Length: 257
Image 1 (cartoon, one colour):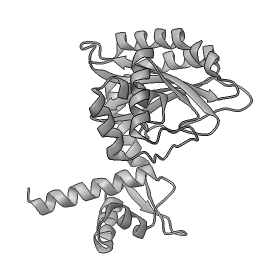
Image 2 (tube, rainbow, N blue to C red):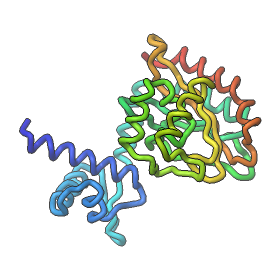
Image 3 (cartoon, rainbow, N blue to C red):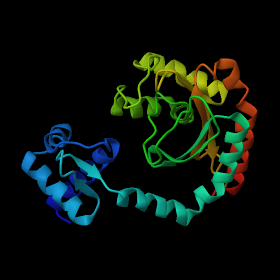
Image 4 (cartoon, one colour):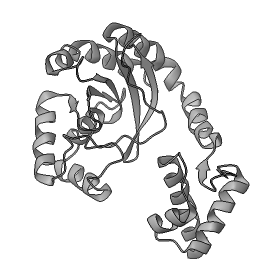
């Protein structure tokens, strides 16, 4: 494959990823600016995605959005792996037990992606989330738990490469390398990640990692429990440690190799 073809493929994937991250729609000029791609080339890439069924342009606003075909690919892969089918009953049980939102994420390469959830809150304020989104690493309990499992400098490099300004950013979010190092070390000592208004105002959560069944040193996913902070103060979060650990152990036993 020529360098030109490779560059075009990489650009097309970058456009698709940007559309998924900003699923409410993006103007072509904003896409071109964010990815540093010429406007004419951005038009061609978007048209290629539309022709393939992965993107569409809203007739009224002119904004470009991803289609459900993008999510269908991931769901088809997860279905083939039988991952969500196996995990969902365990997530539902944990959600009922805690009365809060339970989420499952999987690790792929150097990304963590939310793939499934169960809602335990039956009334009042309820948190929610969208599957298929990348998990911000330094502002979520899941992300911090994963960072703590890595060599420290590699974890720092992952976050700094993405930047400290995440799509999910709360008032207590980590914004410096020094504080990130401290949090990674503290999370490693605890054995679980905490989120206390770091990804979103008024939201708190706790998460633990899922290790591979055949290789315990490999992280394959994570489970979290999240809810409004007025219900989930630090004491309440810590009361979830054992139920969360139980579910993680169950998932490790049935997780596909």
